[in-house]
Length: 506
Image (cartoon, rainbow, N blue to C red; front, side, top):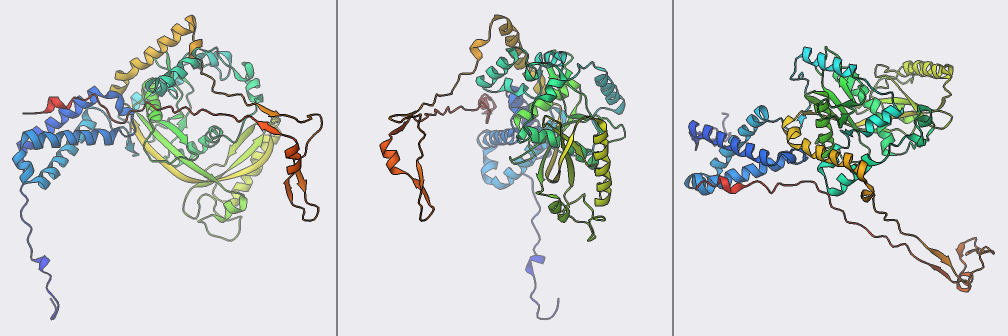
């Protein structure tokens, strides 16, 4: 220490040796006790696993039970004497018990993405993928295809069976109605001739799904295959159409299913919503796969090509040598060529990820233009769409056979209702019309003679209401009365069936 420098007395303070409140034997007994409570809790509330807040709900409830039992019945004198130390050690014990539970009993609801291989070995995965590829598939948008899907509860709408009576009614009514084909017909041509609204969130998701797959394959060095709609082997009323399955044998993702959601305006939290979690569980059960990457993406479109080119992290002043694969914030970006057929329906061509310079893009663009022009398909180039990746969230959802086995009976019961009411009548399930008639009446007015209720000031050019005309012609309108139905969701927030009293150890 230099002369005149103050001594730091904290360097000389020796911390007291930590004395644990619990012996090793106590800890083992407590871990076993906590595991039993967690297991009983899940057994009595299996359906709550689908809830997005499941992890927080179960942890808080189990912690409350343990604290209460310890404070009141197990070791009250320790709890009040060493309160802070006891709580710290109890938290460690609870955390450790949950780790064991999620490892040995059921998987966590979702996990941060990792590159670990599926729990099944490569040979097993290959057999499953080969079998799935061999399953017969009706040609898309034929009568057989519509009938095939009509006789299934698909994974994407299966969650309705676990919601309110209103949602169940909606699903039953949908499945009882006669098969609907596009434009009242069944041919693929009729489907393509149906005009597509390109301004809906649904279409946005369809447009950007190939971009999401392309990014996923590029980031994780894998290949995703399409498998159509697959029927469950045991439950013939269940079906699934996964967005893809990893089919590259040399990839760490081999055999992992992929489900994509392209988000327009909601927040991406990395926690799968209930309906999406249920969807992935049905898909994994149907395909006999154990893991699914749940990918959520958000894309932002540039106003024009110049804005796209200016937003870059690459060198060079010339557009020809400029890198166009990343933004100034190192985000991925790209181009979609937008074509349309004679009916105005869109057809998209996507710039591959390995085209990274502007000059290479121009060559690729020219090739695609020539290819479509010579194809005779009648497509016209409309414009290029320039996008950047705003958010990319990929979490792993593992197959939860316990949840499926405990809840599949809800789907069975619903399908039995569908089969019964297809024969005996389902009209009582038709949605009630909330539409109110609007009556607009103009009285004391000669309707054959048009009225102008606006007059222009000849001096100022200002437009104003013609009060004289209005006063001479009484206009009465009957306002539309809109009744707002306050429907409440049936989502579970906290279970109330768990009997804590049986753990009161007096």
